[in-house]
Image (cartoon, rainbow, N blue to C red; front, side, top):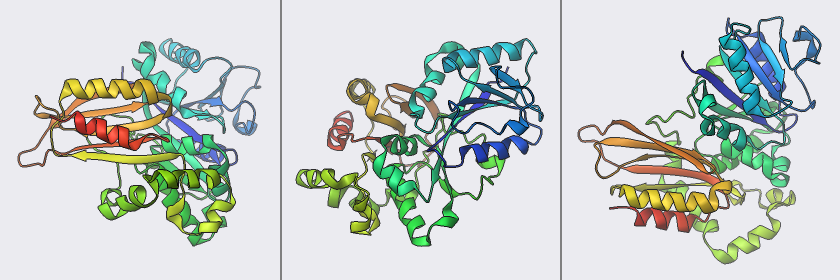
Length: 357
């Protein structure tokens, strides 16, 4: 049987997750969706579209979708849903997990890699993060969870963009891009999003497409990501002290000066990797920095294979796969993007450099 695609929906309180979800559920175009709510009663799905009372853990909705609240471990809930589906007691085509506004999506994503039974039944499609344009600057300044959610995203939806000026929106988009260059951003109005932009995004598939905005890789952009502010140790301290202070962004007024702890950097090389050295190095850094490594992904040129090696990870868990052949005449370039919390960029880049043939 085909794997059941699963989407993780995350975002800060009030960012409009429930609105987006309601819309997807009511417009499901014949798709039956099982929704797993991990919301602990903050802003549950509107009871009007629920059929029975909420004492039950799994509720059939009037539109044929299913809703369940996690009372225990996510793994147990997923196994229960899968078992009921196999027995023909429940019918659904895909799963959406709505996390609580304060949650770190990392452990939720890891469930799909760690547990064989889950991995044989469900396919993690993508993590979608909703960002509330009106309150984002404050939330990103004050709450690391909000910054983590941005770092994890495969797709970012910006809600309430109509409530801020074009300039504020532009500054927010720049800021998000620095934190996570992989995730496309889209402003959405009241959760009005085409299903094609929500489902089957394949953000977690080990495919050969590395979704980084090509402009991000241009060197001019690189300079103000690294050069000017980031690498200079004395600067870091000076920044650190004020960084989370809300007034910080007004003081500068200019969008490149945000020194968020969630950052991204890219490694590129046209020399091949030595597989053993790379494995040792990645094993070592994941061991030390795993909890601070949110998402990382790469398309690698490895010695000893004519095929691209596709690799990605979440926290301590990483996986790799052989991708397509390098085409004739295609430049064999390794590209990796790392998104994490205060990762020591110099140690990573130097270690990767030393893992080349």
